[in-house]
Length: 367
Image (cartoon, rainbow, N blue to C red; front, side, top):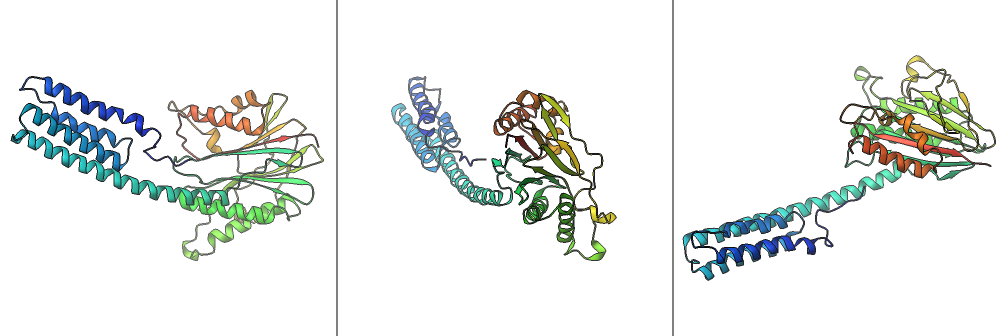
């Protein structure tokens, strides 16, 4: 999300016509009006309007012009020395000064926000790295939509790794909760995946490693009496896609099942058994994970997603019809499909998501 200051220099000159026109109109009408009509107080609107699109200097300039216009009206009507006109001039000076002060404070806060945004963008690039556009015979694209407009990263995550066995491994997950705690746990899970995905011999061993690493790190500093093993966990989907075999292997850990688009048909890849979320498997002493295998042929499109997509609701409470919409874009490139999906999803919720949402699109090409 780009930082956009409230005042954009390219737009200010055109908008300056509004307060300038107001000052000119008030001067002309006030001078030509009968003596009992006084429009001078309307000049206070000029610096007040300028605050909306300009900085401190232009606001100060407009305040000076408004005060000058009030003095000119007083001179031309011969009432400059009256208490009424002098009070109007004093009020203009006070209001203009306050407007300038507001601009200065706003500019400082915008600079601080810009610095914070820069740090957040740097953190995002480190934690949620862009997925590779190509991995073996796969075309891959990822989409992340934060629920909070000013956030770039939350509890949803995805990652990919290339193995020495000519396959691609992927992770998509959703960490419980939100805020800094969720970001910390998302970073933990991503780091554990990146460190082990390429060297664990099998997908079940990778799942065991992630569960153990997640539990150990989230619990290591807690006092035994205060420890709550159910506090931190993450739903996840682990996948292994071989280069030279038209299948996809997956392990579901409490995560929504992927969608497979084949010949304009949508199939939900529901695993026969869904394991506990990452971080909870050790509670039952889980040492085995079942791997499910599904066909994944050339031209097929695989969609991984978090519950923020299927649980997105509009103002009427209607859930986003994810499985019904995606077939319309089945022939699109993964990046283009996710662009269309993003626009359609945000239009459905009128730009306000209730939860973070992430989607990964994978198309198998000919080797």
